[in-house]
Image (tube, rainbow, N blue to C red):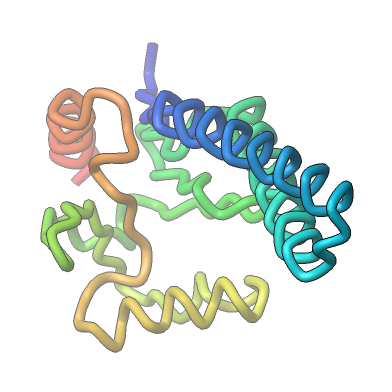
Length: 167
């Protein structure tokens, strides 16, 4: 096998989806109670909460069902798959390095590129704004939370090995 894939940890999504479903069920019960006793303020609040949590749960299930690969390390390039519908390929000669750093207690793996602006072009405006916010903080634009991936130590070792062989 000439490549290594870094997968996201779906267990956290599953736990959060279960919690959202449970709270949504509770909100639905409050909604039924409020409608029965004509408490329309509570009914509106409970209904809105139930809808928001159901939509959140659906989004989480979509993430759980989707591909778990967030980064693919190939001999010729690093493929960043964490941006939905916008996979990015960084040739190794444009990757200056990678760094592990912490922002507000969250360990992150950032990829330092020669020209980050080149890869920001063509991305959706919201995504681009978030990535530029990373740059304003003095961090690499493209990063991933180490707590959100499976086997982070193994992933860092594989990244170092492939980066060393590519350079």
